[in-house]
Image: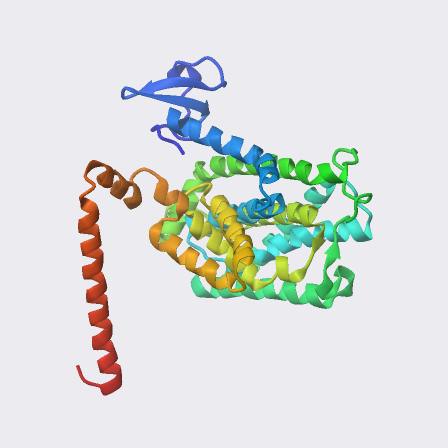
Length: 405
């Protein structure tokens, strides 16, 4: 996001930038004009326009959904929430190189906390439900992180998977949380959660909760950006590159990784609490099952785990594809898988990562604009690569069947 040599911890005063206030302003560096949004966040005018367009698109989603029956606000809302959980998971994946297979544990903990408080304690306030969901999910992340981070690599991934499945089994077997039927979060037109003490009409509830989600996502992205561009974020990068070297230079590796793990849990729990308010009913399969953890991980990779908003985009795309596929065929899982394979091959750095400047996709698009004839060379190179791959496959098959080369 930062295109200027300055960083978030740049100690230079405002006067050094030729500015007198913290309000957005323009500055010039090496002949290029930039917009300084806040301390450490200096963007090109084109990126400012892109971010504003993205914000306007998010705000306009309820109006867009009302124009077409094929676009449902509930589906897009779910995609945003799972994408928010993927943004949290991305802290581990991008900066510490740890792969968690149990992130649904925090998402489900947040959702079930909202359900338990609403059903058994008659809590009506959205803010209170979300705060409690985030708090309990954070505590759960602290416990699981403390026990799992004694290991790295495959053993860490398996431990997170095991803890997630343990919570899933508990939710399935306990009648207090509804067992396999799940638990409600204030369903019904006259029983919905209130916002700051105000009762919401049934047709307004979904829109208000959506805009609350937009506000939460904007704040969450900004906070995440500040964190990853802080000295703490730099330390996580150093840990991800080489743990031993990071420890030798004085970084408390285990404490920092545990903090990153808990941070990722905060995002997952908050998204889960919001999910409970949107769906108004929480089930184990939709929140705690291990396949949900795999989907959250895939959302981060699909959108581009090397970027800030890539996981959010990946969440929206994956949930939307799954919903649209059900309208076309009974084999929607196969259709979704085929589309995702094409996306992965077409966007090797994820959707957002492949669209950034300097990516191979952008370079190829620029080369194609400059000289359209290169498309023929690419087709020929692709055909040659395919023939070579088939030739290797044929030789390997002969070796496997006849045992000779």
